[in-house]
Length: 347
Ligand SMILES: Cc1ncc(COP(=O)(O)O)c(C=O)c1O
Image 1: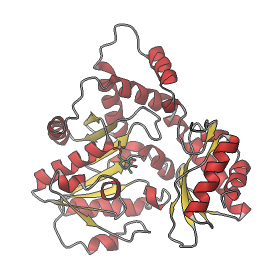
Image 2 (image 1 turned 60 degrees about the vertical axis):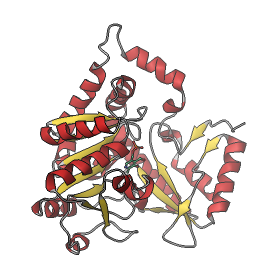
Image 3 (image 1 turned 135 degrees about the vertical axis):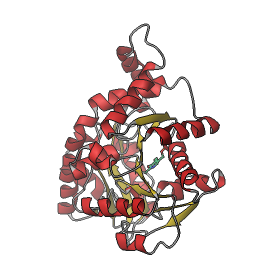
């Protein structure tokens, strides 16, 4: 039997792991006689308004939403190539769906261990359908380009007739690093995808926002791909709960992430990347092998019920491995020193 998880530094939310608790909360929110289409319509409108976009469309997954956005940009521009970081989600986690399903090409831009720069873009010699930027760049410990860089890079793309597309799976978290309104950040991009189940703690789903014409074209592709599900209200309701209850707390999560990182760095055994987290997400580089850290993490879970990341990744420093932490409702109850003490046991 799997050990019982009593506290977690891995899950954003304990709620999603507990279908009974989710259903009770949904029941509190959905009144008798509710039109089943209403929650999704309300969600799309609220996200369009928040991002300052004319239209927004629910998708069952971000994978489908982003491939669709790129497909629409490719058809509009008559170009098949999109530029993105070598470690973007489409390149690493989607089985080359952009190419297998849509015949698109990924032009990897920049260094694997660094954010894309304007100089990297200047080396791109081919016409692009889109430039895709991920905010924050998850695989780099949640790094964000400076605001000026972000403006320069999106302007670079648009000046060349390419669309600027935002992988905003964690835009909710990224906004705390810029401290600018969502609409100002989204305004730099033609299309924006946001996730409903990561920081927002909903039960799956994604939304793609943009101008009306692009979103209409995206809705045709959503249908073709089998994503036009009529009964999306359970996902929409939990996302609406997230917008009301979790989104206003993002800055609190970021502050706690900074306090936790400071305690880890002061302890000196491991070090965080970046040293001062820009968002509630950051990485911890640990001076031990992946196997040793995975085994220690398993032992801690069995002995104490505390869940730490169980599948460490490689680190840019070959003498270390990396784990990822995102501070959310669940992890707020760990004091910074408690986390530093736990990390010290990963050896
Ligand atoms: C940065 C990023 N983009 C896109 C996705 C895809 O989202 P989904 O799981 O809804 O397909 C993820 C999921 O982890 C992600 O982390």
